[in-house]
Image 1 (cartoon, rainbow, N blue to C red):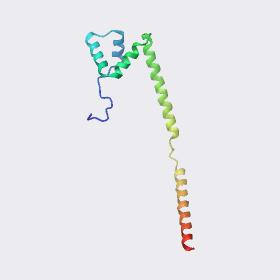
Image 2: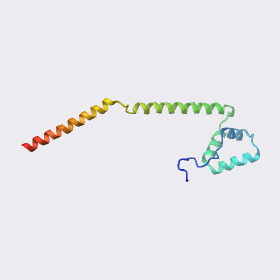
Image 3: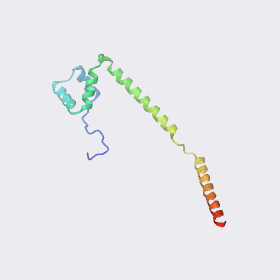
Image 4: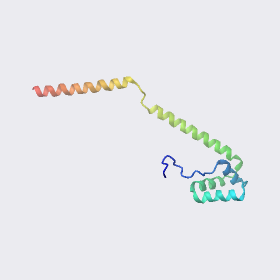
Length: 119
């Protein structure tokens, strides 16, 4: 926990290739055991493997991954666009108008306050 910027505490995550090889049964017994040990230790990895095992057509799995990545990138891009639209543009006229309104309010207060004192 010394490195607070590292939010993923385990750096020995499964790669896509390892996961696909595990699902297809193309790994050696030792590699298979290490992946199963990771599944026991990490719930996220276990859920990922169980979810991928439920797919009936494993040949289309790379297509599913590509489709999910495209959809994720599209969602991120639309969120960035919405955020950029909400952002107040650097317009000097807005700052000038706010300054003038504040000065009018302060001057109005002083005029009313001085009028109240003199009467």
